[in-house]
Length: 438
Image (cartoon, rainbow, N blue to C red; front, side, top):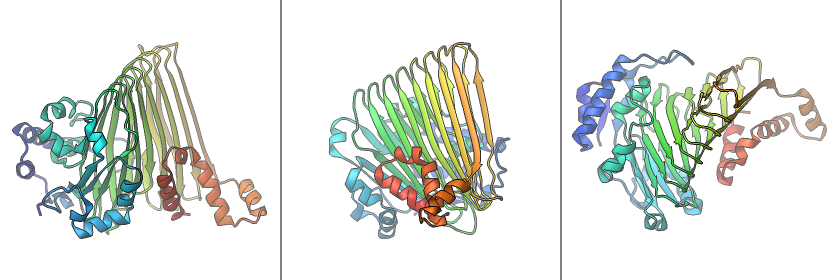
């Protein structure tokens, strides 16, 4: 077992890189990112972040090597992922699975037919060593380490994550999935994910995240870079159910070339503070970007979520649907950016934000930035904040349904558009997770 914890220093950065046997350029990159992390302040928007960086474990391994069969995975780790349903899901409908426990991927496997199609699906550390030219072509080009304090931190201590390369004109029928588990008190997890979907290809990637509850905080600061090439399609489905002591501060961004489609299906249920705004840069003509998200904040949780759509070319289209629910004093807010540039003629953007507050103590804000810089494009934004309709409750209760069940039915109907986009097993799991809060 290897552990790097508490106050982060340049020597500890070197220790991580040396232990991982990385090339010199990666160690130099990490050190550069670390110094930027020290220099930058917390974001000047969103909820206040009271984070003591000296408390965290920045790197922790649990196994000596990565396994491709579950029986060889350490028993307590295997039981954790079995309890989460990942092993059964792999058998039923997934084309490949990666499982990260703390800082390293402990299990990884992919269908043989995908290997025969020359699909690359591995952890990002393996990609650095096995596909160095391809890795360098895409690493840190879409999300730069110096964008904010947490991209810099990720650049300094990243470990694990997913690397996917889909060759041109390759359709992957079954989803690929990675699951990220934090299991240690005061743990920091900093995976790095890079996805490249070749011209005319299609991919559905799924991500799950969980952690047990402790009395002190943990930190998850991931970076995701996705390249959707000409006429390609990528769907990225996330349901994160972090415990209420996790700061989830993530940067996710895709660039979409001519005729391409990027879809973010983004579910946010857990965490202490969640700041996440999946982005699409619509770089080529007729590129499309969609984001459908839900955020549920309960108790003292803050869900500061949304999406970003940047239109750079003509005839591009974007659609944002954001559903937020707040209860027991939670804060579920939308924060987004849609920008149609001067050259993006005949572009179309739509934003629809709906929030339900379940009590008097809960809160929600809609904080959009919408910019349209030419006269031939359209940008529409609609936002509503409401409470559960007493009329709807009365109607359902008049049919013999209890108040609690009626409330549940209304909320499930409210998030119906999001649930429709999930595989059946995930929709069932989402229902189960949400029912814990009402």
